[in-house]
Amino acid sequence: MPLNRDHTPSSHVAAPARPPMEPAEGVRRIKLRPHEMTAPVTATADLAVIAHLGIPRIEPESWSLRIDGLVGRSLTLGLDDLKARPKTVVEAVHQCCGSPFEPRVPTRRVANVRWGGVYLAALLDEIGIDRRARFLWSCGLDGGDFAGAACDWYLKDLPLERLWAGGVLIAYELNDAPLPAEHGFPARLVVPGYYGTNSVKWLWRLHLAEHRADGLFTTTLYSDASDTAEIAAGMPAQRPVWAIAPEAVIVAPAPDAVIAAGESTEIWGWSWSFRGIERVEVSVDGGASYRRAILEPRHGWAWQRFSLPWRPADRGAIQLCARAFDVDGTTQPQEGARNAIHTVNVAVP
Ligand SMILES: Nc1nc2c(c(=O)[nH]1)N[C@H]1C(S)=C(S)[C@@H](COP(=O)(O)O)O[C@H]1N2
Ligand SMILES: [Mo]
Image (cartoon, rainbow, N blue to C red; front, side, top):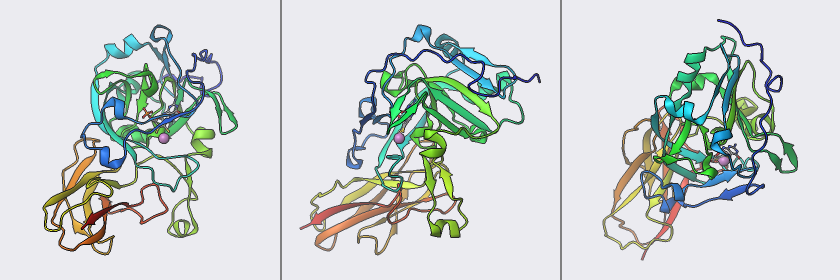
């Protein structure tokens, strides 16, 4: 297979002009709290909007996506070229991992949506992959200042082997409609099972490389530092924020709900992780004891509903907790982690 000589991302490729940014500063719009996440598929209007540098307003006619680096041959695609290829719809959990400056704070910014687009693995099959390629770099058209640091483009990377687990799309649709500007129009990367930060919006370049991309959003931020206990347990000192850790949110009852003693009710919510959830347990005594909940099987990359019928016997203030177990047995920490156990306080008067 002929090798593309253009291995360094900055060389030879003319960077596109920055589109107008409106706004030209970070946007963080959080819509739903857990008890409002009642819909199995989150409406687009209810989806959080996270844009670190602002929102580029892109003219579709002048937009193109370039795929280069350690590939057989580089490829440049317009929006019509993408749409001319077979379209796949992937329903997937979409979760923001929270502020990159507060990696241990749970924020529960999560949704479940339908993405439509082209399988990136199929495109790479078409153009060929150099066997030295180990990482996929992806670049958004947004740039500017973030926390006092100048940033040319929003740049992320991920291990190429993630592609072989399936589902990775160049998406141009969200919930069966064109991507809205704030969610990445005209096209974004979607990496199901990875935290949202990896799903680069306003994509203009994909680059295959031998090594990771150094940068603000790759090796500086979104890189979890292990504490001494984690290092003693064999974890690396730094862990990129890629695969989603097991998590569950309680949708109902809502915080401060009043439930009559002896009344039948249902405790329910959503659970998810990169590998999928095997078991969810619910506590009605603040975590002192847990019972196994009913759990829907996983379908593709979507979140899984859990439920437990409950008829409160004792009166008083009650703390509900839910914890998810990954198929590999991993569960959620009590506190001090982005996926710390979710609790809801209710009253049984
Ligand atoms: N180009 C670009 N892509 C981006 C971001 C960004 O700031 N710029 N933010 C990321 C983060 S942190 C998250 S959580 C998701 C949010 O996607 P959404 O706004 O469509 O919900 O987009 C990711 N992709
Ligand atoms: Mo995020």
